[in-house]
Length: 123
Image (tube, rainbow, N blue to C red; front, side, top):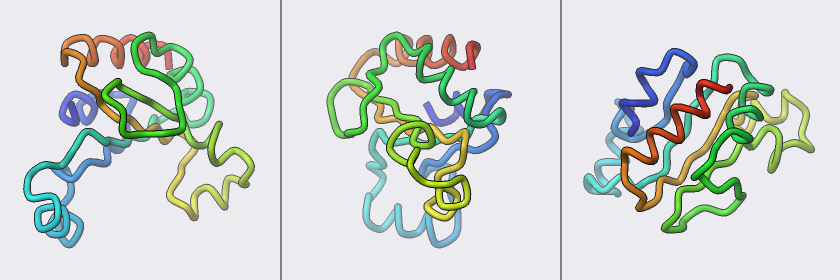
């Protein structure tokens, strides 16, 4: 999943333990012991409006603020949970305008990637 996202031209950064190095990777390896889970974040090049279009275009992913479900979930914090903050305050909390967070569920990987691909095309 993270490789699919990392290779997409509309994405500038993917946040997942398998793509980290240094202290972050060491901690992930120590505490998660190779079971990195289904949480992944990424940043869309085109920012806020692209993030909104991406979320609005998802067909299978649920757009919710909570994570940890068996279903695939997605959120764009800059336009939802962190929308009351200024852009500078969002940046200070690690939320960029194009940041999207996913909780990947138990659906078939082909269906997950197809939904992400069509939403990225719309972003």
